[in-house]
Length: 355
Ligand code: IPM
Ligand code: MG
Image 1 (cartoon, rainbow, N blue to C red):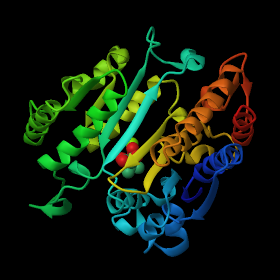
Image 2 (cartoon, helix red, strand yellow):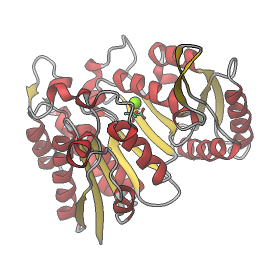
Image 3 (cartoon, helix red, strand yellow):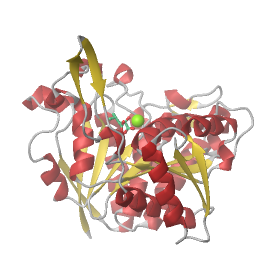
């Protein structure tokens, strides 16, 4: 089979890590007899520099002609926080999620045995959780939103809003994910304060009745943030809204050793899904061969599994990454005494050698 993949390399370390992931993808193709064809799509800060806007016309259409999208990272201090949305790289990320209908963001966070020493927590080595973050609603997209001068004071506002359909569909994703894991869902909200959270909780409870084999619990987001560092092993699947999911997924990632290790999948009800590392563009180390490509390489594994139903190929990548770490190879972000420091490119090569 021939698959077409849109590559949004983006900014900072984006092009370097995507470069390594593509090498791995091609190695998988050669090994298992698939052909992957790539289409470069310009988006993010680099698009502002090239054509004056972060999300050029036709970006979503180009992606829709592909079977999946791989994204490196977008953004960086160079582009600041312009008041013109066209000049903000983040606008592009939110627009592509919305335009491709990618409402479900899966962010698995598992501590690999080889990286147990990088876990900043004292005695928790059993971290294997997945955050299911709602990605196209909530306060990120709620209207009204804006800034103005009110009574002589600069004022800004956003709206956190969810309707029952948006909540139900993400809840279904979470329960179904849990059925394939340890059958536990923890829904995170702020129902003690927010009206939107009370609807969220009600609908999640209703949906849960269709999944009697899955145990449902609820946490307020502040408590969830604390529980994640106190005892992350208590979690299997966490389902939550856009903003809380953004925050908790960064927290979950760092307790697994490094944000440089974690992949993600953003899925809608049809193709293409979008696959990207959780980390950002890391402008401080961009272009120096220091970036960890493993999160992007593992995002390829998620693509193979979720977009192309290639479970065996996905496992081949995951076990090659595991072997590479087990053999003591590290990039700077996960370096420890006694291990071998590799550049971005060398890490990609090692993973391929272990395939
Ligand atoms: C993420 C990022 C984005 C988000 C930013 C860059 C818009 O933090 O993917 O988690 O908040 O969704
Ligand atoms: Mg984030």
